[in-house]
Length: 170
Image 1 (cartoon, rainbow, N blue to C red):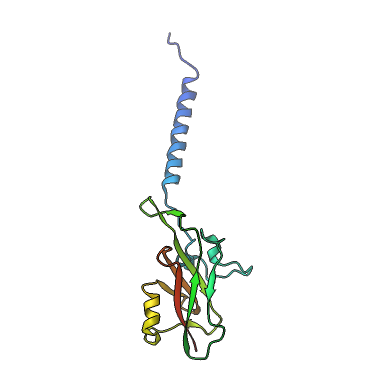
Image 2 (image 1 turned 45 degrees about the vertical axis):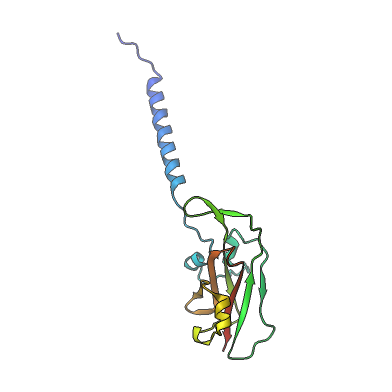
C-alpha cells in the first residue's frame, strides 16, 4: 500500500497560485504607463486645459506645485507682436528618470492661456532679435480651434529655464 501525503495536492496548488501571482505582478510592473502629465500629452486627454474648478492640466505634472513667473506687457496695441517670458524656478539639483532609465535633469513644460483674440505671432512678423531669444523652443497651439492657448515643451529645464514666446494681438 502506498502512503500518500494529503497536503501534497494543496502544496502544488499554492505553488501554482504563487507562480501565477508573481508572473502577473511582474507583467503589470514592467508595463509602461501612459503619462498625461506633460502638457503636450494632455492635449489628447483634455478638450479644454482648464477644468470648471479652475484647475489646469499642469496639476498632473511634477512641477505642479512650483511657482511660475510670467512677464508680459501691461498694455498691447492692436496688431502688434510682443513677447511673454515664462520662468519656472526650481531646484536645479532635482533629477527625473529619463527614457533610458538613468537620472537626468528635469524637463519643463507649460500651458499658457491668453485672453481671447491673442495668438502666436506668424514667423514672418517676428523680429530677428526675438527669433534669437526664442531659439529652438518647441511650442504650438493647444487645439486648432483655440489659438489663444499655447503649449510649451517639454524641453530640458536647464537650457530653457526662462521661455520666451512671441504673441500677437489682432
